[in-house]
Every structure is written in structure tokens, then in C-alpha cells.
Length: 139
Image (cartoon, rainbow, N blue to C red; front, top):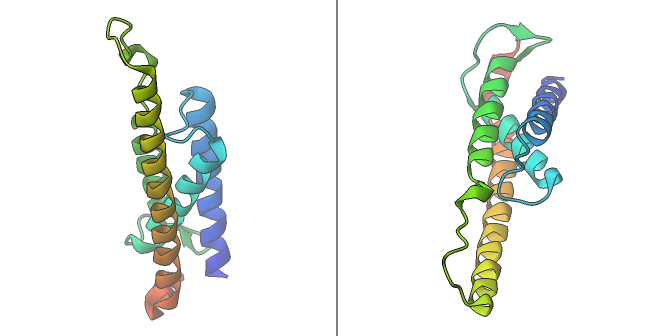
């Protein structure tokens, strides 16, 4: 049952931060998709929440403060990675073909980073539940 509690708390905070950052700040992180932003926040919140030392009081057997802290930090980091539209200058002359090639290379690297991050977070979650000390957090 502790697994479902962790899953629910991580899902709740991921939804909350996704809505706040997408609607309030108009930020979706480095990815154009809101779903990808949510997936990264959800998995990072879940992994960080179960790996950090329990903080605060438990609610339904889950120490939710660690999940809240990790979710907020990850959402802030992802939102900060997106450059503002004001940083672009129209004075600089750029070769359009070179600019497209640079953009494709950057998007390819970002795609690789995304999948490495997702796999690492899933491995971290599985490793935590596979370890025997997850029962220490039951109240």
C-alpha cells in the first residue's frame, strides 16, 4: 500500500506543478510538449520523494514534504531552462541553413537527454522499491 501512496502523492504534486507552471508562468521546460514536462516532473518527484529522508508528518503513511520539495525544485529548474523571447536579437545576420542545422542538433541532443533522464528516474524508482529498507517509512 505504501507504493500506491507514493504514486498518488507524486502524481498529485506533478499535476499541481504542471498546471501552475503551464498556466501561471507559461513555461513548459525545454520541451514543447506539456505532457513531457509533466512526465519529467512526475518521475523526478516520485524518485526524489522516496529516496530523500522523510520530512514532516505522514499523511496516510506517506511523508509528503519530500515529494513537495523535490517537485518544486525540478519544476523550477525545468522552467528556468527555457530562454525568454526577449533574448533574441534581430541585428545579427545568420545563415538560415546553418541556423536550421544548429537547431536540429540541439533538438537531437535534447531528445537524447530526455530519454536518458527518463530511464535514470525509472531505474531509481525501481531500485528504491527493490531495496529492503523502504519499510522504514511506514507509520
